[in-house]
Image (cartoon, rainbow, N blue to C red):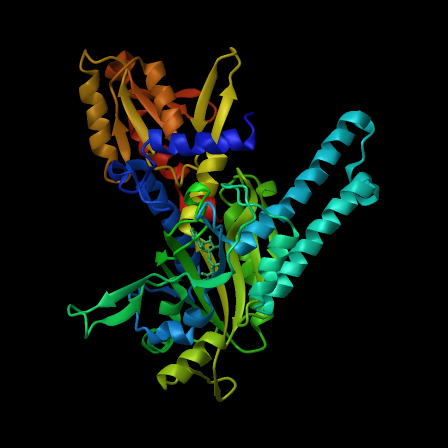
Length: 511
Ligand code: GAP
């Protein structure tokens, strides 16, 4: 198995080679942290979105959908706190003229302590062999304890300084730790400044009358401002949820790690409105429900973990991330936040409109509390794609690259081949395509030897290959080859559809 860095490089090149992801406007040398989804990528992305939508909206009678506009009244972002507080602390290096997120510089430095601790653990593992007890070692070895204490101390100091908005203190911390610019190697830093992450734009044609707007940095606010509309027209009763998928924009300064952190990305968010006082019960419910959704895809339960937030945003009374084991380690994939009544109250205050619910059982009106689930569609794409991409050594010693996407998410469900390009086999294969295309995304391929065609579809992530051969002409059967087991089976043509249906049944996957 290639190391993580190599695997990540392979993920990026494979995504390009097999028509999943291209850099944006590549012919002009691209635009940093903006990506285009290609012929297979757009299908995978659509299927992930659909898998989320069905599990959230169709599986819950009390959750409905919404598609709010990207452009919203500018007061929205004042009320939500984004105008004042959606900032990153930035610092420039005067020699390289490079700009960094100050907190990321410190985090990266702190992470080096963990790397040192890991080196000690690896060394000890080698030395003690079978007898090595890692749990005991990390709790007793003075070096490991020292490195980890130093890391915690650095991170705590930074969290304290940021909370106090002590930007001069953050700069001093960077200087005290001796952090150098990765490009120039110098410690010649500017002051730390706050930088708002929202993209501005203008509404209107003339410069003097145009209104300043923002591209939404999260989809959630479109749900909050529509709370009363949806509640009334849908006759929704608490508890109920509103789900939405759509683009969000953030002027990320440290945009890296491929589609993990983008400037234009897509979110899948759901706001669940509950009675005040019941939010913790629902918070726990959604943590579990969302983790189960991830596990349902079969990418390996060991690849998920919760990270409960200790430091909470001003509007939250509980928050956790579902972290995924990406090629660069465990990182946030989804957030579950108990957002109290902060947003609805803030919009009430700024708009002067009532955003409350009259609870007939309690015979009173109140501002509901909100539990939010928020996942990045692109990040989910990266999670699925990176874990599915595998190099395998086969029994005969040969190797293959296979993209073991869950079949429910695979862009192409089946490829249909004529064994050879003659004897009427292409016509039969095309007839099968014509019959299947109404229900499934299928692909016809007659180029190259059949073995090569199998490998091509393995690498593209197609779960089934159906081959029409001379026997098909006699008994109306074909072979169906499973991408993961590589086993072939002979089945009648009329059974193909049933087979494919079974492999992409939401009931099979989601229940
Ligand atoms: N409404 C809450 C909210 O937006 P967030 O933690 O800022 O919370 C939620 O974002 C999710 O959106 C993250 O867990 C991540 O999956 C995704 N996300 C956030 N910023 C992103 C970016 N720059 N690129 C790709 N995905 C991003």
